[in-house]
Image 1: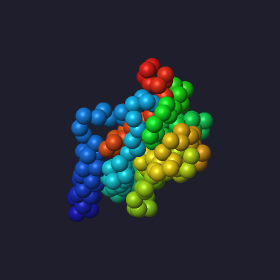
Image 2: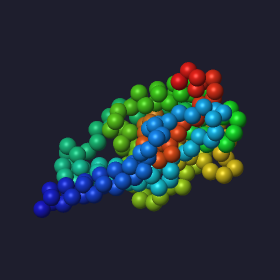
Image 3: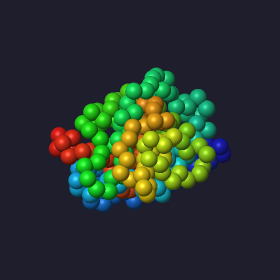
Image 4: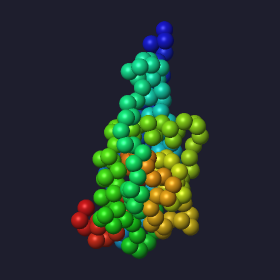
Length: 198
């Protein structure tokens, strides 16, 4: 009975994640990178980002219940390493002008993703979603978790291109990259010169 229930729970959680991610389908590429003068880069749609994160958490939770040993995420390694905070500049929601990250900032984002495993990224998403509440989004400098970072800044902060100040760990940065890349409207901003070489 427990096995069946866990399977049902996993299916429900997968449906939640799939539904949230499906909103991202359309003409825009996943993980779209926009040029600094081509209009505003969009943060991930809040409902989409939250839905994806909660769906992933549900899948992982159900898997862990199904098998207390094999279902646990293997997160050994340097997930807590820092040094790639400049990746936050790609998360700017610029309104005008040449805003966004430089080529080196894009390199930091790639380094953060390369430094961690898929399971470490999943755990960072699960940890961010564990309170069950919807996140509203924050600018990179103020973001404390991958969900807020993926949604991004709002209002007067739209033009701020800043490094992550609190959310510095590679697994968190990589998780934010994944969530924004999968979400509806999720885009990354690069300055013109950096975008031309993308």
